Image (tube, rainbow over all chains, first blue to last red; front, side, top):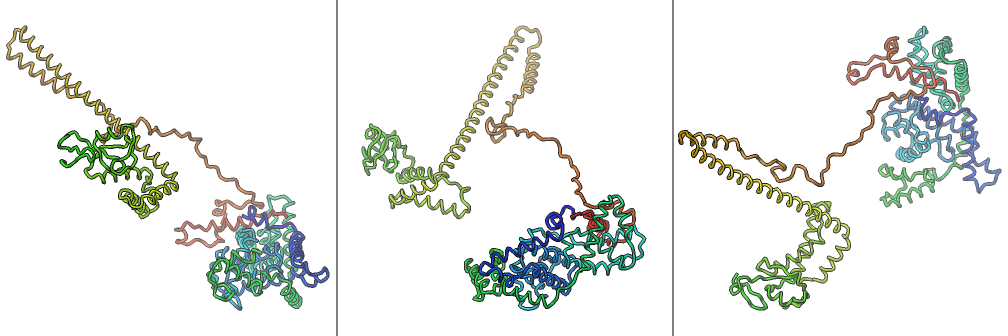
Length: 325
Length: 309
């Protein structure tokens, strides 16, 4: 139940400024840690600003959506929602310069598959990734434990999908609305966009679901206000109703504001990121390869000459993954 | 037997039938009188090998071959320290190795092979296994004590039974005498036919014997000789104080932060199930019912609606 969940306790914030504060803090932390040798002025040209990070992550949220949409075998909506939650939560307390969103994105989806009991093996999973698949599986498995740690092992996610079903059942039973099933397409469209906003870090899944239902109804030129006021909130006070109305309004306006970031800007930011990212966590960098080699040698494991690790040793490399830095 | 002779005074069993040969740790025999003579002061050396000996360590030679005696002696001494049991080893193999080692040590000592080295080995072992040796010694001591106790009890029981039998026999004897006297009295003073009196008496004696089936002593032990209750060791089971019986209380319902969802009853009665996929026969067998997902969806929909940041 959401009311007693870790999601409500630790991952639902009071307002957007609180979220922004967290992000800014970790942006500044990264800059102060890695930018000691660069003078004040140059720093802002070299590192990403909080706004740039935000834009970049928005772009990667779009990538995440696309990746899940094209995933074979097709994945249930719950996995997508959970992956989005993980992705957003991870970058609340980490900078995208420290861990490249490309890598965290795949790890989030992989972990979400596991948690939502959508059974795909790592081999099946990386078949959906373009490029070097073996390297991808190494990266995902290396980052999996780090991701769980950063999520503080709060892995259960309350998605708005089941509440939507609940509302539809309730509406069908208690309302006179004709054919509520026609709301579905509107609801799905709304929920897809909701995950591109901060709404899931601010509101209860049932509030998001209700916003989706109300939005879809208004698109169909139906009015469900009386259902909300006379049925759902009949016994609750006016103050509670007011809170809900405000929440629904905010969620709907957030969804309306969703826009994909300008491609040109993102391209510049990505280039900038390539230079300022933490090389210790970059699997292509020399420093990362050297450390992995050292870690392998330390454990007295037979290594095959190349720095790339095979899947069998991934258990060890996970422990020695970049999170150790 | 005839050639059994004291090596010192050359007395043989033939000349002195009460000859008793004694041996000490070194394994060389002496007759009892020679021991008395030589070890007047309590200690001295063996006339054969000059090993210093103590008088108190002399024992009667049980075996003809004095080597066997010596070996037994050594064995006794070694086993006092090498007292591990099979339970002290992880595997049978280890235990067997240990036994083998003991035998090697005993053989070496008995045959004077590398005596210094072997003694060193024993010392080393003693040092290494001090605790286990002490523990096992105590254990063996305890076991012996228990055994002695059982023997003592058995002895007592035996005595008791014997006394009982003797008492009964005496009782029977007295009874017989009394009966005889009564019969003679009757024959002397009664006026009836002597034959009749005899027959009636024979009758009563027979009756009495039937009656006097010996009273069995009270059974206090199993047929194996173990007492029903052993005085020490076994206490009656301690009575455990039990608190009040456990009473189930339904766990408190957490705050749902939303309107109350309909109860299971309401879901069934108010037609919610019309909008949920009905369960199949197979699913029913597994305990699934469509009320469950329906209730869960409704609960999830309503929980958290009042959530305020």
